[in-house]
Length: 228
Image (cartoon, rainbow, N blue to C red; front, top):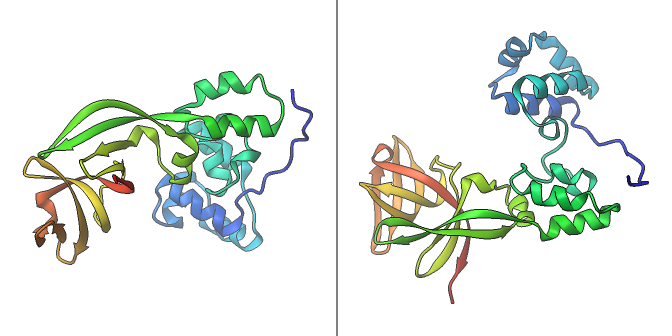
């Protein structure tokens, strides 16, 4: 066991806490949250006004819905170095880290484990409108955390010009470069949502406006490495 003192965490409080409750439970407002949790709406107003946190509610949501305590209690950018190594990610690379971390005592040593940890991404080649699996690729866990990505929903896509990280959870068109399926062909193009259920797609020889229901979005590019 480490001799480091167990410090108090800077928990979410007041409005930050109750807004996070709505986000984590997917409630659109305090009325829905009140009905879900069987708590008077006025209670949330009291917590907001006095900067309070309900630790009992954090435990209840964790036990009933499986929402991690870290997500319920702490800001999203909370320093990982202050948390146990098993909480650094979503357990996608934790078996390897957990086995190693038990041999280390200091925070500096556990931080070093985290900095060297990797996750495994599925790797694909995009050729002639087809997405071809070409195996797996290790990727730095720390960088994945900085990009707020999960290995289970992130893929690496290679073309002749670049290598892309694609977040498959982002399937709503806003603006950016997207992996998309158009009439059975898989393509990578810059796109932007337009009014009246339309989208503008930029092609090498120009741009076109297409109905959104004619395109299936497979993910959004969050990082691109250009080939030299």
